[in-house]
Length: 290
Figure (cartoon, rainbow, N blue to C red):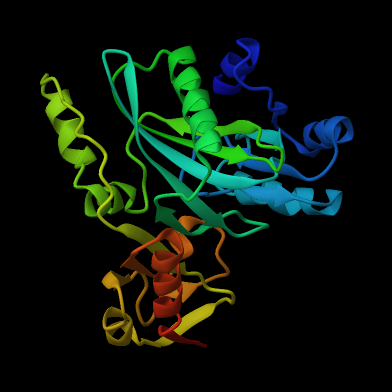
């Protein structure tokens, strides 16, 4: 419904189709070409999302979604090539304010997020285009109040396409990273607005840059040993680090956000500095599988 609304109003032009079976997906591929993205219409945390690069990958991707519900409808979309960002907006009485644009990093076949950084380092011209696209999207969908989390792809030519939008706060610690970086507390603002208060959005002032990076498993097995967390926490710039799995847990190559093993949040004096510190720190996690 979101795709239909945005496309019919000239906000976006992403090619898509609903599908039930392999034949539907093949028909779409024959029309738009490969690669395509296959995803469920109503999931979260990258569950069931696959990038199909060859037709022989269709059955595996479809089975990932249909495992729990064989009759579940899926969405097949053209693959959007480019850099991905999420845009955190707070709306009040139809007025939309971007609080932050976050750069996101994902795997290729199963686009599970590896990490992101607040704030994205992008030219002001691209930033303005992203903001306008998101404002137009929210207005088109009739969103007037509360937080929203919109993901966009910026292609090599500078065109902006909507991946999806959510009428909620961003996940993966994005509100916490925003508060650490700016002092803006989106969780508190959301609660205040829900209680009927008018919420004034404070001026955006960057204090630090923050990045989060995850440990994604590359093999399947049972964890017989996982250590190194204290070394991660002692690393330069690290402000928070925790395990998401423990000894005895069975893991697999990351197919969704819930397969990640650990995370680290680091702060720096720039986007690159924060990212570098988070990536270097997570390498100190040691995992052995049986």
